[in-house]
Image 1 (tube, helix red, strand yellow):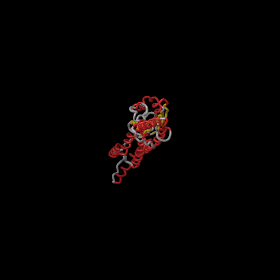
Image 2: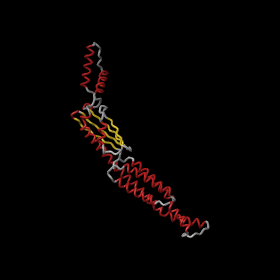
Image 3: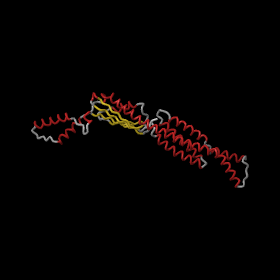
Image 4: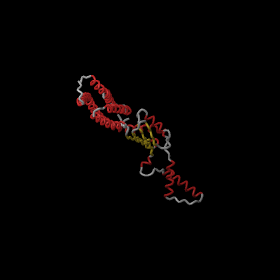
Amino acid sequence: MRSMTGYGSGTREAPTQQLTLQIEITSVNRKTLDLNLSCPREWNGLEQKCSEWLKGKFERGRLNISIKAQSPQSGHDGPDWNEALMGQTLERLTDLAQKYNLPLNADGSLLLRIAQSVQDKQAPPDWRGLEAELQRVFEQALDDLNSMREKEGHALQADLQTRLAELETLRQTITQHARDSVPAYRDALLQRLAQLGLQLDPADERVLKEIALFADRCDISEELTRLGSHFEQFEELLSGAEAVGRKLDFLCQEIHREFNTIGSKANQIAITRAVIDAKNGLERIREQVQNIE
């Protein structure tokens, strides 16, 4: 089981192009799969290739991918300037100034403008020539990301198993009180009748009919059985290796439905309190499930 939240990075040298490729991938929870790519603006079409590399590896979530290509000169601190090209530009400016007999003040301000102009014109090579290297870096970052997601997934699994056990304890509590509800109602009914001066035999048909109607109205045995089944399925999914986020989210909806029905049939304060506690615990489970792929 994996969390949808994580971070991964990868770096690789591309000697033939004299470039350092750096890729960072972050993921956050989302109901659908969504890709957001940041890369050199000249690398059109790379987003589609990234989608192909991701195919089958992600079920849902929002992925932010940052791809950078840096030349060796950018390894030092400060701006990445091409000094050779700056020199050529300055020589051409000097020749033009002499040709037209114009003054040329080659100060720091002029050098800075030349540097910025040259820098803007530098463009990375076509990414298609780097596709193999890019894919290796991408897979490196993806492995790093998945390692973090799996680690967080194990923590989520342990937390959800604990919370699920708490819901099962509440289910058992409700089951126990439900067993006592009909006898308690029968005793209360006979006591009220006695207080009214009506001494009816417990085997009287009218008494039995009233008790039967009450038992039918407050019967929650089916809901409790379905809850037990849902909990078992939930536990099985938590132990699986596939993407289970959507299935767990569906089970949460079904569990909530059963607790709602039990609450509407409840005729004892103890059952009502247990249902409220269970729904609060289930809400915390649903919040955690939103982070599972």
